[in-house]
Amino acid sequence: ELKVEQNPLFLSMQEGKNYTIYCNYSTTSDRLYWYRQDPGKSLESLFVLLSNGAVKQEGRLMASLDTKARLSTLHITAAVHDLSATYFCAVSHPYNFNKFYFGSGTKLNVKP
Amino acid sequence: DVKVTQSSRYLVKRTGEKVFLECVQDMDHENMFWYRQDPGLGLRLIYFSYDVKMKEKGDIPEGYSVSREKKERFSLILESASTNQTSMYLCASSPFSGTTYNEQFFGPGTRLTVL
Image 1 (cartoon, rainbow over the protein chains, first blue to last red):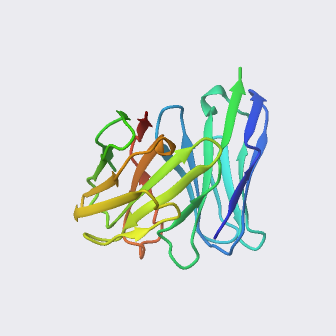
Image 2: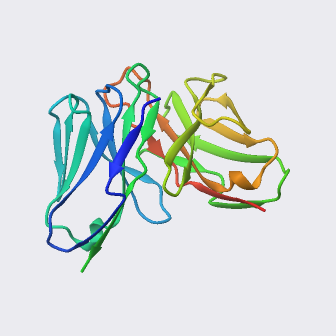
């Protein structure tokens, strides 16, 4: 079974600081997804990373994928309070792209 | 705009009851999924469906069944609810796996409490 580990699980940071969330997975996969979940809400898609070396940026968030290291990172630049949420990474099964495996999530709290 | 809806946001049931959770998507997606979300465990796949009347077990199918009679609708059934099925249930849909992104789109979730 494909395992996905995120760290840290909890992250409390000050506004204006930078930080990185890590997502490691256990089996080769070329497809990785990042989602955001606000309290009481559903998951919102942030990024889809489809190949080794893929990098995508949206506002203060940048995601990258290293398939050889089986690692994706979500980098937060100059955090603002509005980024407070839980972030999940998900990896698709190498032979069945429909089947996703999710990490436990990283709960980010950005303090003003 | 992509839309996945779930029949209830909150549901309270008693142990032993049969429970139906409904999910509808309006994107003409082939694939539909049911997950449960528990603190510290992320999302775990219960069942998924590639097409009408097709279903496949996910990682935690025990105690659940599903039904997909129409393309847009995917139902999760708890045959005899138990307290350990208290959880947040999320439905998702995605287009045919041959498309590049294969992104899953999620509904708002149903928080089920079994007493």
